[in-house]
Length: 232
Image (tube, rainbow, N blue to C red; front, side, top):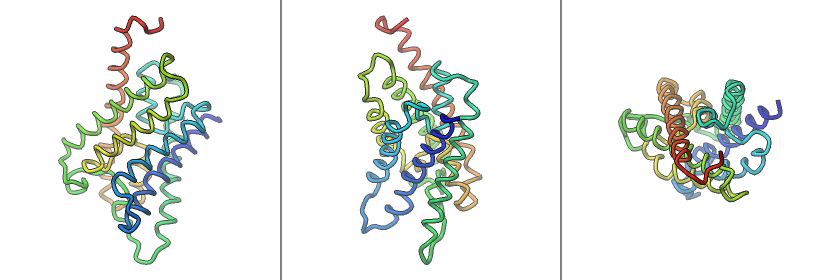
């Protein structure tokens, strides 16, 4: 149970910190954090939680990551459903707290509430296909980074930095395209408090990250299988 509680708390922090930076700070031009600040906020949530709970649950914080690690042979299928349940619950709790804070100002309107979208709801107006490709590729690269950074032959203690900076880079690339999901729990939490369109488009931000994560894990395993230095 401690693993599931850790995943709940970690995903709570990811949504509150990452989406909170977009809803609370980036919404005010005088704060000036912009795209770079929001991207860094998401990376920092993962980096800080990786050091805090990585030794407890592995710090997945993301259903796609859990699926990818299962495909990659790093995570038991028997724990997949409770991990995903804890992550989604944590994401919803984080979004609920964020909503309570954000709605405490006069004139508040939920709007997109940091949700992910395509078409007219993409920050840059990107099509559904463009968003689908972006989310698949970005999540695949995220899994590749995670599996490589946590490989037993990688430098010890540096995995959270690589993973956190990897997520930062992913956000820098894809916020204009999809507002960056690569995480179904993050997408689900805020979509519940946003305008109705967010829930109608949520399916893509489950399908694409999970497919991408599986691809990333398979690619990494194929790389390792051809590496003569890999452990048997």
